[in-house]
Amino acid sequence: MPIACAARQGYVRRHPVKLHAPLQPPRSPVVNLLKRLRIDPFTLTLLGTVLLASLLPVRGTAAVWMDHITDVAIAALFFLHGARLSREAVMAGLLHWRLHLTILACTFVLFPLLGLALHPLASHVLTPGLALGLLFLCALPSTVQSSIAFTSMAGGNVPAAVVSASASSLLGVFLTPLILALVAGSQGAMANPLDAMGKILLQLLVPFMAGHLLRPWIGGWVARRRAVLRYTDQGTILLVVYTAFSAAVSEGLWRDTPLLSLVGVAVLAALLLGVAMLLITFIARRLGFARADEIAIVFCGSKKSLATGVPMAKVMFASGSLGAIVLPLMLYHQIQLIVCAVVAQRYARQQRVPAEQPAD
Image (cartoon, rainbow, N blue to C red):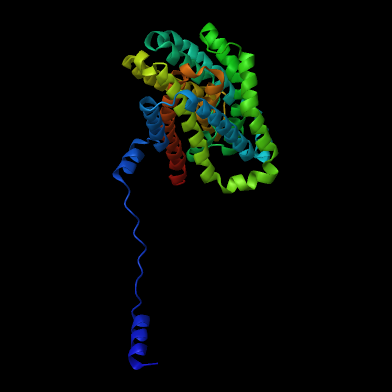
């Protein structure tokens, strides 16, 4: 080995070169702003989809084809939901029946009662379609993914949240059309609740059960691609929203909806969520549930599912009225994400404080 080369190697051994970690690309100011405001990027995508449908609505033969494509996408969505549901988690969670009954009562009893209490005010402030949409929102089941995520973030009973949220989505197939028929009465857009239930069973429940029965063979494949399949969920919702608002815009949605109604539905959605969360927290504490169970009850009992609600609305209502009916749900979806993120962080901080206090 040449002397110069050996000397250089000795120098390197005595003076190792420090390798720095690769620099992370700086975050976009828009991303930082959204994070501070706790605005879900998917919500911005939803708003962009509504804007696209308002400017370029699909019409005629293209609308018919989009309607068929949406039906297939919805069936695929619920097929994948069925494949994700773990049978072991269901069996383990069924033992906590008192907690599950409390969550289901909050979802399918408390919320419809709150919707009826707000309806006299809503009928004066909102258009008929938006007022019906607020009642539809109150009849919907709980969301699954975000209920579990917020329960985990707050330090709550995650297995119970998995079972309760999944059971709520499944029971909503049967209960939502019946509850809406009871609370909406003659103003509902459904000619026959049993007919609506039959359509929901065929389009939503049958694919769900097929996916769950095939879980032993495809469950692993679905679990490994959970991150990718999340975009399938969101893409289906965007597709339904685009077709729904295209039909609504063609029927004159924005022409017939005053600005006061748009502001009013956002205020009423926020009021509904605030009152519901306060009452649910009071009920959970009054019934003597442990803190972890209270967290699961609060987050599972107060959430409403956009992923289930939009496909249900497509089955249950006429296409021309669909845009106004799902608009309250879209606003409630974003409000619940912001509020529940704040509440979950507060629960988590309260849980850390006693652990950090020194023992006497």
